[in-house]
Length: 275
Ligand code: HEM
Image (cartoon, rainbow, N blue to C red; front, top):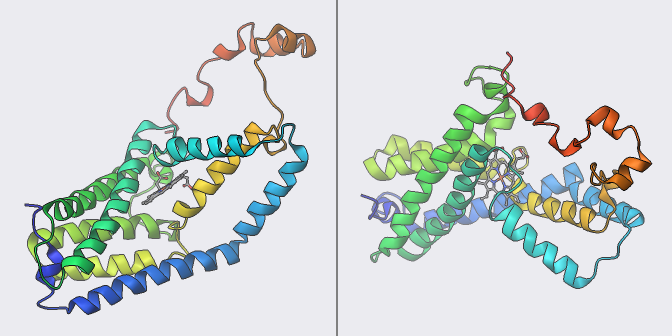
């Protein structure tokens, strides 16, 4: 079922050169949107100023080896396993969207640039194109239907769309309509696929798209501030059950009991569904 290359079938209607041009234009729009986003939000300026500021507060000097190890940890933990998500369902949904989207982009490029104008595409590439489209759509739907905070915690309706929805809706539209078009060859579905992907790649400036480039840098910087002790200028909590710390702050047991680390789940005790 997932064995055909939908783009080589499309070649009878749309010349492969037009498909390739479209992909290149979308790529340029992503680069342009990201650069405009960086300039507009001044995020790079803030990032470097903040890193400079935290240098003054650091208590340890990190060597090249430390930084390399932090980089590897960021890659393996924060990026590759989406470890920033505490909610396991949200984490799983993010992994499906992230790996799915990367695979979808790579296989789309292979199928269009390598095989749209003829030749049999490798079965693995066509299979992964369909599977990754399915993974992004399902991961996106899990987020969209059950995890979004205004829907899950504030009980709002699913349907009024706001600007913050551009990324997730156009992402799901691209993979979902792409998959349905490939399975049915219906040209209305193809038009919706094209519309969604154009919105996805042309709205980077207004959407959350560029977080996939910024978040890794932020996760790295967060680890650096912990390792060099600058901690974003926040105090180190320490081990609250440590007698030395309790001697310095004798009111800890009074407020937190004699076994502070076992204070319970706090605000995580129950789901925020009080609407
Ligand atoms: C192909 C790449 C990626 C795609 C398609 C993607 C997709 C998404 C989507 C749809 C959301 C909103 C849903 C939610 O919050 O659960 C999201 C949020 C998030 N993503 Fe990604 N992501 C990608 C890469 C990354 C990378 C590389 C990182 C970080 C290292 C990252 C970190 C985050 C974080 C921390 C959030 C939640 C915080 C926020 O809303 O700003 N993502 N991502």
